[in-house]
Image (tube, rainbow, N blue to C red):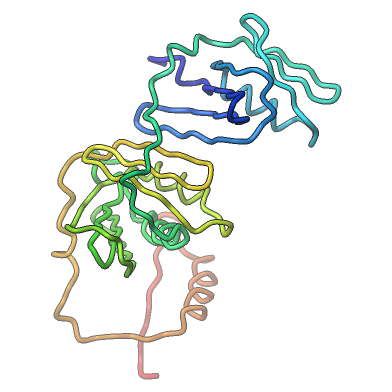
Length: 265
């Protein structure tokens, strides 16, 4: 509401590179995707992201022609024609340039798995911003992701030669990590990350994500994890998951808890 331009896609067509770059941002996070296209003439336009997306999704699987006509963006495909009023693209916030000269390379599939293991423990509503994010600590030989908000603590560790000389810690927004996990596929396992003091940049396939880091001190969650326990239980994971799913069907909606009874064998 403060900046109407943020509801727009910035579409940048480059004739010399035969590419179209589509960018969107909410100031805290920016995403760009580059696709190949037959570009007759270079140009830049800002247009409603909602309308543009709905139109493209409704079109048949045929060639799409997109071009500007004064203040309109025209979209033509088969027997369909649309005219969208464009906005002043010069009002669109500046997006950092992609620079991978100082990037760290991580296994994308493992990063996606780590995100899936911890994101359930992120707070949804709290006055402390750090609880709305995931703590990501990178050591030379491993990296650790942690999420917590009092009642839950989730920690995932990946043993991996990260190529860093000293330990680095960051607090990333779950929105950024959720989108990153969404675009990671089995087609490519290289994830480039440029880690700076106040922001992080991820580059995966034709996607580039810029995100500001959350500020503040992450709680010392290790103090809540007991280290002197002597009770251990080894159980078949698939059997446990199946049993929990069956029993949870009858769980109270208000409390939504279940009781475990553990005996010999």
